[in-house]
Image 1: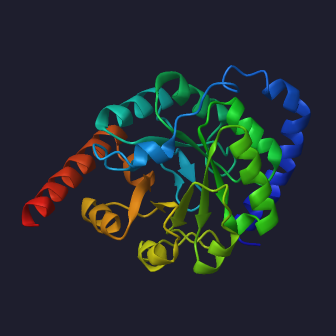
Image 2: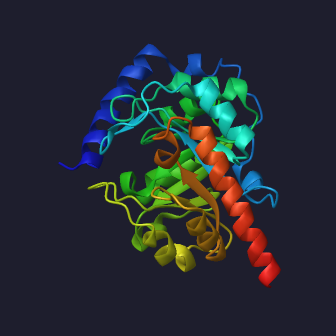
Image 3: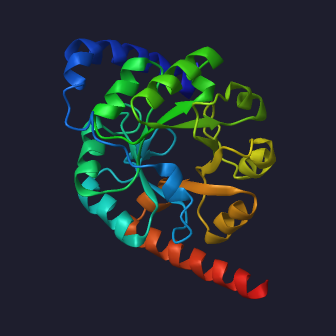
Length: 270
């Protein structure tokens, strides 16, 4: 059993437990449930932004602890002050050290699109995402068959959430449906957690034009983002590169400055 299989198996048990503790009718009473979501699509298309989706991430199955003592308030506010386009918050606890309260806290301090980063396999989790303050739900194609993915995406849209469908191979694009807003290419192989940014470049032209393209994982250089933008990507999800440093928001700010400098030089050359 690979890492992804272990996560999904645990997630099934976790959902059943949470469903008993926090019934759907209770989630629907959240103050966030009827609040209009902030559009990630609109923020990624803004020309005054770089498209960085800055992630709050304490640990990972492959690297262990990354930044276990970081606080959501300081890091998320810092990311926004640095100029990030959006936030991503890990809410999986056993494998990534996250929790639902992390996303709700980020929502409390920031007006920006927030992606719930988790392994969503059940409609309950979509409703839960809405209740904790998320604007975007992640649906991982590798974890879902085509029918289930569309079911979850349809539910998300009915609740006012945007949908980011994550793929790792060209074959997974067959699961695309009209309810998806963004397509994320995960440069990390979820079976063995190896990383290759080349995956995004390989899949770029295969992603249909109406969908906003997002490159995820393994990005650590401003030059890579500039190249990915030229390949058609508008979103760049970065977590570990920022979180492994003592001051994630400063690292984010430095990268954004470098991107702006590189883009400025490209404009001058054309």
